[in-house]
Length: 110
Length: 116
Image 1 (tube, rainbow over the protein chains, first blue to last red):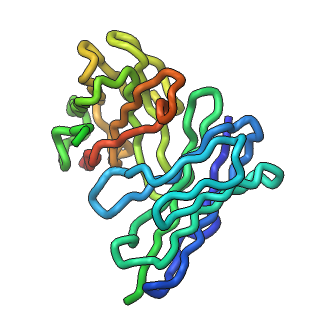
Image 2 (image 1 turned 180 degrees about the vertical axis):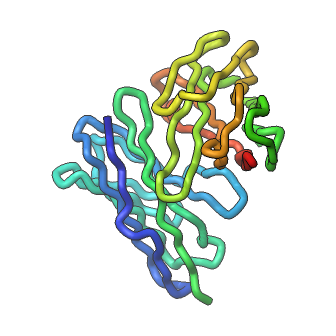
């Protein structure tokens, strides 16, 4: 199996600052990871993914870092905007099954 | 815009009622999934399907069943609803295969079920 946890249930940042959301997983066999964003009243939306053969992947204003040694990944959001306010959670895939963390609620203060 | 559509956004049912949650995807995806989402517990997999008329149990199948008669439609059934099944239910689909993005789950907006 797999156990996925996020380090902080809530994170508050000032608009314009960078945000870092962390996630830990337990199974070294997990080989694919996805970050999702869930806004209030909506289903989770794909943000960015990374495979275990990579350490870093960048998207538009987002970067995911994967440290397989300590089984940790992080989502960095540059220049955080009010529209980034949401719950963020990571998912780890092993043997074609996804395991989800419970999420970090990101609050962006104007 | 590709979509996973859950027909009921909010439902209120009584204990013992039979409940149907419908999910339709328009992406011709092979795989479909039902999760429930509860505070502090993350998403937990109830059932999934890799093909028409095929189903597999997830981590918490007790009290639920599913039906997949057509590729685009995956239904979750609560035969006799109980209060501990009050939750947010999320349907998802993925294309499957080995290509890039094949395992990415696309989610519906969710169905919030309250059982009284």
